Length: 116
Image 1 (cartoon, rainbow, N blue to C red):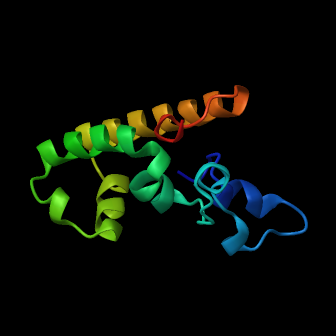
Image 2: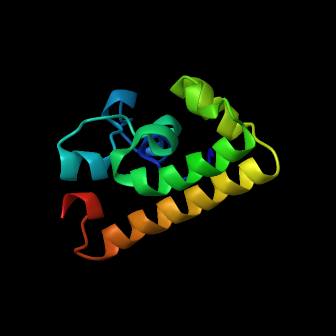
């Protein structure tokens, strides 16, 4: 996931350099007043604005790995990023849909559904 549109990656190339702790999720900041680093962990595991899509992802992964639900979040991230076959397809679908949804929010006056 290193060639993506998350702040952790995108803002490291800005000059002057944006400190890691300041590369925050603009969606959480603007809609929930949360200042959280927007990295792969945030996007895949905890971003509240992607909860609905994440629920589908986690249900699909749970069908393949019965212990997934009981894993610590850091282990869930490792499992998702190192998955094979159906797991990686589910992760790819989540990423595609998550980035697409964010692009829609950027292009319109739409707000994340849970906040309207």
